[in-house]
Image 1 (tube, rainbow, N blue to C red):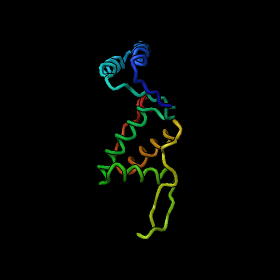
Image 2 (tube, helix red, strand yellow):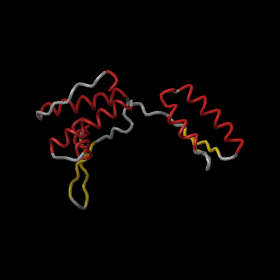
Image 3 (tube, rainbow, N blue to C red):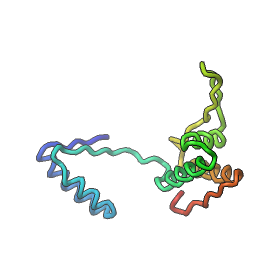
Image 4 (cartoon, rainbow, N blue to C red):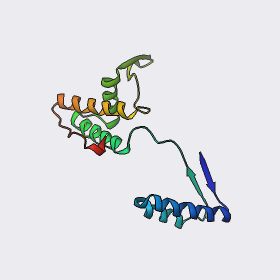
Length: 141
């Protein structure tokens, strides 16, 4: 759902909403204050469901898939696809360029537990290839 604020009346309500949010989210107060400072053209707020995996969990995975990819001579995207293929299995598709190997499933809609298993696959595969990834902290996923 997107909410548009553009009129003077909307700006008054928006300021009240931003004040409420800054009280609710004190760690984001500075960001909210900076955002509220420039309302010359109005504002759009978007409300949508949060993904089921946590941001620290995803950050941990992305950091270590990138580092492991460097170790293996792969780009982060190539390394991610390799881990997905190992974790979820592969599909082979005939194309004009020959047979293409792709992951049977993507991680986009994974639950928190499924994503944790993907992280564990990354750690296991890296270990098998003599690349050490530290165990995630509790807040990493």
